[in-house]
Length: 409
Image 1 (cartoon, rainbow, N blue to C red):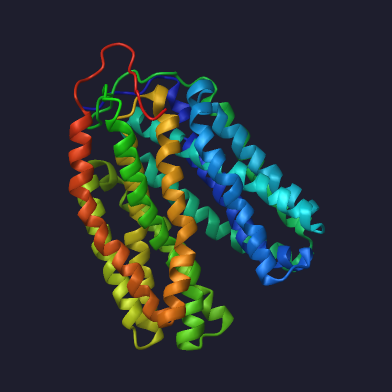
Image 2: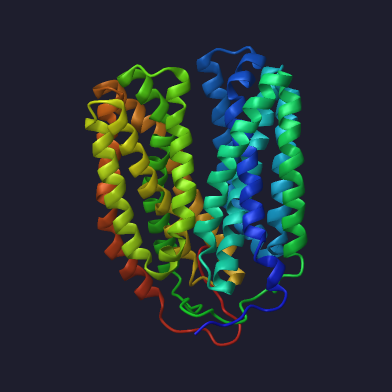
């Protein structure tokens, strides 16, 4: 049985998609302009690598703190943080000529990005619970699609203008209004769950020790998922170049195909992420592992591309499904902190993934390194029984009146 949303939830339905579109617009511009940012800063590759570490240095503490901010101030925080992220891109472009200023600017980008990430995911999980629709997966699809479009647009604009400030300002023209739109559509959102939509879990009163455990487990599984997804996205073009001597234009097809496939898969398979989440995780892992093996043993370029596309189908569903599954039974008043816990642990996988793959590639070559990525997705199904058991353990009884979540604190 489906329960209708409160009237004020009407505009709220579109807020997650606006938020993830704005987030994707920023990161599409960022990815497309990194070579120019490095050149403008006049630093070596090693120095630029150190500079980029400030993204993580800003993101991690912001991700930990944002959940409390959302729980205290409400969903409108997501729009404000997203608009701030758009402005930070302009700040980085202005600061790029000075090494110290660039580090500070990138630190601010990382903090704004990490905070926005937690906020829009909490927003998507809240709207998913109130509408009974697979909003988390479809919001992530909007992100993937917008990254692809934004990166192409930023590349074209940069080729014409050859000016970082112009490109980041164009990105801000997209991201900031979308952030303000999110703030406007969430301003009148109800503060609490009115009722659980059909097929969704009822908020529960868990024990103090149980919720931190399940959130950390989901975050740890999410870290493996992030590491796998990031490997294909980041190293696909390198694989085509090193193993199959593809031209730069042809090599660029790999990340573009990955992002496009991820967007379509997340949108098309979204209903399964809420109706059969654990089965979706297992099937996605099987597809991703098959894609990894195909990529690692491909004798020519077409089978390698087929493997990358298959991996995109599988890995693109892992984190949205985990996030939806983990946050669905969490009551509104604690969903921000729960999102912070899952997202922060999962983000560690995103950071460690490139180093893990780099070590494998150094030892075995880029192509065979994808065996190590296939191993990550192959072991993920082993966590599914634990996820199910943990959720059953904490779902002790429905909350009457005001729901309360004791962890994480």
